[in-house]
Image 1 (spheres, helix red, strand yellow):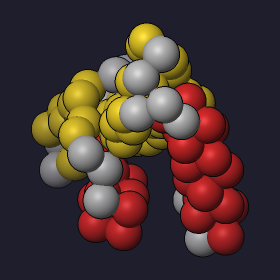
Image 2 (tube, rainbow, N blue to C red):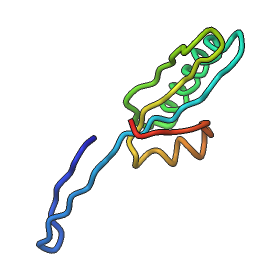
Image 3 (cartoon, rainbow, N blue to C red):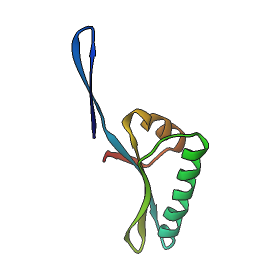
Image 4 (cartoon, rainbow, N blue to C red):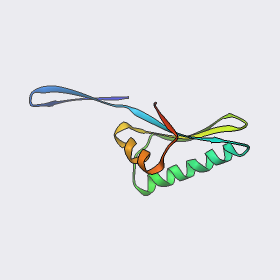
Length: 92
């Protein structure tokens, strides 16, 4: 989490830029392969539109459940959310 402090009209203003983890869930025998493949598309999307991100990765939770995720700044979250339709999100 980043905290920015600046002054506006002689008032001290503090803003917090949280990191948001956007998550896509995959289930079934090929869940892990689908999550890995989805990460490729997440990277392509971010690079094609010159969008910033902190991390793109996948995680296998069991043999039939895996997820792909991207961690972005809260200010950029709506761009990713509206375009890519994640299944869920959480504060990273």
